[in-house]
Amino acid sequence: MSQKLAGKRLAVLGTGKLGGILLRAYLKQGLFDAARVTATVKHAEKAAALAKELGVAVATENRKAVHGADIVLLGVKPQVVGEVLKEIAPELTEKTLVISVAASVPTTYIEQHIGDKVPVIRAMPNTPCAVGCGMTGICRGSHAAAQHLEIARTMFDAVGRTVVVDEKNMDAVTGLSASGPAFAYIILESLAEAGVKVGLARDVSTLLAAQTMKGAASVVLETGDHPSSRNEHEKGIHDCEVADCVWSLLVRCRWGRCCRLH
Image (cartoon, rainbow, N blue to C red; front, side):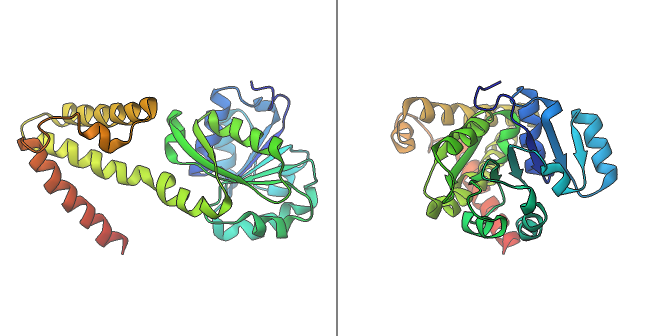
């Protein structure tokens, strides 16, 4: 357990997809003591099931969950953030750190709803946090200090990598790394499908494609090289049947996704 988080009480409000991913990762790594964690969900039936699965207290009342918490992880949907903040505001103090992973909700909005001097950190993680390979951008609100950023960084470093950015860049972070896995899956799908078209079994083709993407990303991360410079080292990319299939499928997948999105 990190010294920065030792003994801290955590409340996770909205333990849905992203909140659930983060909480499971924190518990698995021992970042927080399960006895000092409270989570909330919308329905009592889910609360009971989640409590049994994770071994933490799970409730449906946000204010009750926040009482006495040192860190509040706000994982509810953006459209209900205001309502939840109004509910929990009486329980928050200058000593409570609020970390929001609600997409596109600025720190000023949160600060306006919870009163003066409560420190707020805005974070945008992505779903690969589930396997410890996440990417998170964080920024601080007007009342958050360096130590609050460090607490948040410790929490998100535990599930991948973290960068600190100015808040004006958080929407760009959302578009790139938070939405980025969806684009990566389109490329992965195209590579795997191309392998199938030239005779590979689907499971083999998918493994080859996924490990290749993981390896290429690791090379960029570990060497610091620009992707285009690494591409120059790869021979024959334009001269094989698989490459032709990839380009064709990638174009089809890209336009297909765009049509469905719009």
